[in-house]
Length: 556
Image 1: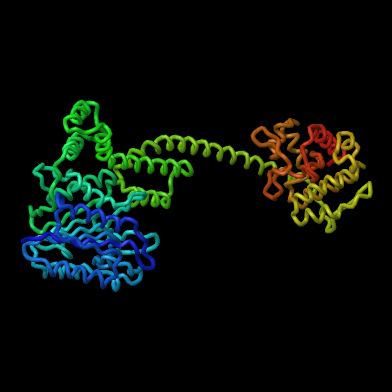
Image 2 (image 1 turned 180 degrees about the vertical axis):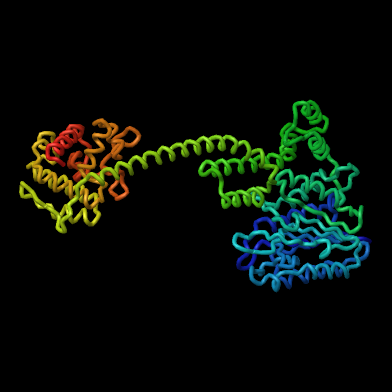
């Protein structure tokens, strides 16, 4: 009497370097449920093997094929990692298979082929719910090598079903118990939905076609395959259940389109609920199950859209590194094809491209304006350097009418410590005018500032900045802008975007704008939160105007 016998293998645990899987043991349990069911699979003998080592797996496979007779139906199911070597040779992993020794600790496809070829049974079904990874590198990436399953496992009378093509990953489903392919194999048998010709039987080709269509509705990039060595060869695998739920499901499958049921279809489906004796709750559950793959794909598309929008928002145009990561997310995680996401990318980038072009044009104009300004400043600097008298003596002139010591100011300027020199400039000027207690200069104190001291301070700044900084430099710029405070502030870099800068925002470097320093004499030194802070004095314009007049009177 012909028998139907099956061996179901699930491997969820592995050795070093290979990530664990959550679905294989659940896949085995689900397959066992439908195959053992007398009204569905009707298999008399179903053995399961969970997390075996390579010896246990070999013995179980050998036993399966060795005990089968000519008219028996033999089914081998494997859920777990599949690995290929650099020659594209397939290995099925075991619980002790590690990244660096898989050829020694996994089960070679050639062993399965040998056992299958020596088997008397003329009807054999091999189902591999596994990914074929030739390089278990960082992150468990799939290597694009050709795996010739037909050559390695095919034979007359044998049908091989694979969950993914030779260069793809077989997808686990986050938050769901079964792998994607096994989920729809089980659903196709259990609900009878795989019986597409309505003859009450589910043949292996029907089952694969149903599962493939559902898988690709969720993840279009995933390509389950079927290998038949004899065209048209088919194997009766299970009986389709005959009940009201199965009949209603077939109607829903027939009317569903692109993940939706139209209003017109409900004009038929709702009366049919009563015909089949189904409650609205049960009917809606069936409808939801049928539409579920499409809705999951739409969710994947939305996930990709969100990721793409975020990356484009952070940086546009996208660089090659970012595009590579997005491509991996699209294909390996979401299972989407390029054509699936093309419209999403076009919608987002078309608007961004317009913004980018506008920004690029504005930046180009700003660079042109900056070039003109820089050229003007260079011309001013050249003029200043030509007309400014610099101390030529080997030792700097540190003369003072008020007995002020300018040694520290000279040393700070000589060392290029511009900020400290700026603050020292205010300190010596306060001392020269007797306003140390006031902490700031007023127009009257500037109008009476001793010429000798003013000349000493200016000559030190001009000399050690190579003509870029100093009161005499600022005076010439002041006169060139028509003694306009706003224009002057913009020219020397004390103002940005119409706003006067805080002292902490000024530039104390050699590359600062010509005339940018000294600046502290025009700010007030105050105590704020117990710290010394410089703040812009509202009357600084009067102070600078007085300073410019005093420079003229002192012939500086």
